[in-house]
Amino acid sequence: MEVRVKLSDIIEGMESQSDESSSFLNKKTGEVILMTDYAMRAAEDNEPLEDVPDWERELVVIAREIIAETGDYIQLPTKYDIDEYSIMESFCMSLDRQEIGDILYDSISGSGAFRRFKDAVYKYGVEDKWFSYRDNAIKGIAIEWCRENNIEFED
Image 1 (cartoon, helix red, strand yellow):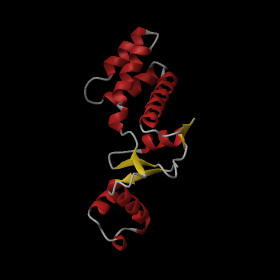
Image 2 (image 1 turned 180 degrees about the vertical axis):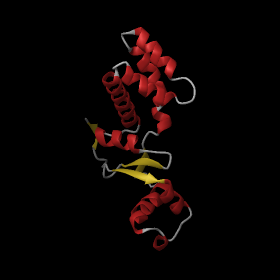
Image 3 (image 1 turned 135 degrees about the horizontal axis):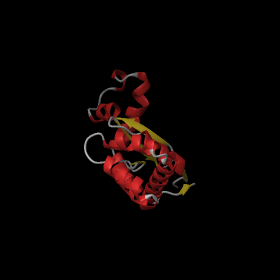
Image 4 (image 1 turned 45 degrees about the vertical axis):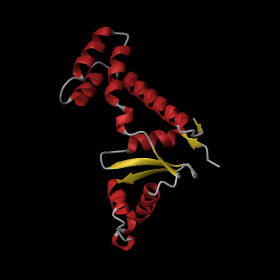
């Protein structure tokens, strides 16, 4: 029997990922695991556990289960699934004051877009609206992911 997971755990797992780590849900326990690329490589290379640092051994064991596709673990949406650029773009178009939306929209093109957008959000005093909009968008992605994967969740 699969457990009911906390949506906040899913969201936290999604937001904790980096270029060097991915998050997985243990469908039996409801626990979200942040898996390092090092642990996945060690598992793929079948590195002996005694050669793995003590603090990373448990992750390597879990990584081996993930690689073996036991069905107990499922990867959470990645940063590519979240696509924060699209969320920023939608936010710009959602603002009541079109001139601020246009300025923010112009800030998200080219190199350094995320930094310029963040600076503009603070400059024009819409940071609370932005963070609320972003949080709701990520929550929506988490809910959709749970439903697509038949994961029962509580809010």
